[in-house]
Image (cartoon, rainbow, N blue to C red; front, side, top):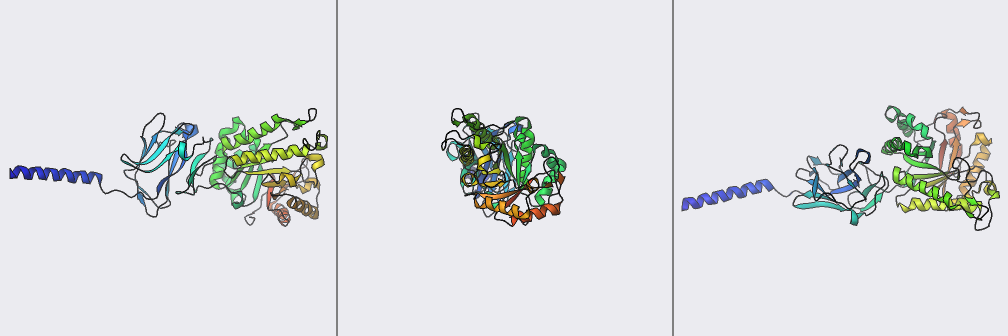
Length: 442
């Protein structure tokens, strides 16, 4: 009996030891979180990815860790099995595109992500509770600040980078008007030109509306992705009261505004944010073509100035509705006191728009140095709550007689306008002139 008892005890001890060896000591996952989620189903065109982040102070062993999803199709399906170490401050992006995630999942359906083991959770995300909004095409759910903050649904992502709501005041105030036809040259040779201009200190791209046409979507998305990864801010350049020709927003006969005009502009603005994830809306043709004085059928309720102001207000409301720091800007004609012809009153527009950009094209208007400064200072002083950035030509002559300028000449004009109360510069345009270094402009 003693021998049998010893045998049983030895067998029990061996099994217990084996169980301990299998489970091992409990791992410490302190600081490891699900930090960002792009939930765009599982197709190549709609990549789903998840960023894990180590917000702790020690490296974390990922072996034995898994990421699980529960949605309308799956219940605690393992999407990824961990391996290796993640250093403090390190990020690990898992994607359906490279199959590091087994499958994708969509933001228009309820889903839960759970980071942990079969027996317990390290972190989780429940869409219906943590961030119930549906994502746009380039959007993601992000913890802000990284690792510890509340979840926000933003129309742009910050893949493998710090999560933050965009703040244009933290970016140098140097911009370029760019046509959609310029995209190929910016993207050629692995984005060589884009990188070169970034290296010269330019930070904002005002990208013409044609780039956002459905036929150009894939190319434009690739362009925006590449630009943002480099550090650029891309603004969608909207056509407001021009739609293949001047389109008055005032119904003079019925003494009211044309609701369909404002609806078109709002819808375009919203789609540029949702579908392309732009961080800025730039309003062009936010004026009348020299005929504003003819469109005041019922003052003060329905006027040309009122139409311009309404458009500015509504676009600001669209931008603010995303709670993502979307910046608004507007191109203005460079004549002072131009409400009579254009309906633009900067002291009213600046109540809604973040940045006013008067197109002070000195060579088209034959402005002297003193006149350039006078005009720039007038707009800066009458911009209400907005900043003023001066729009500058990169060529001499009028539109029909163009001579590109060299870098020194353009830089001389930049210095002239920066010696005013304006805060930034916008160059018109890429493709004309040799752009100078502006890294000293903040």
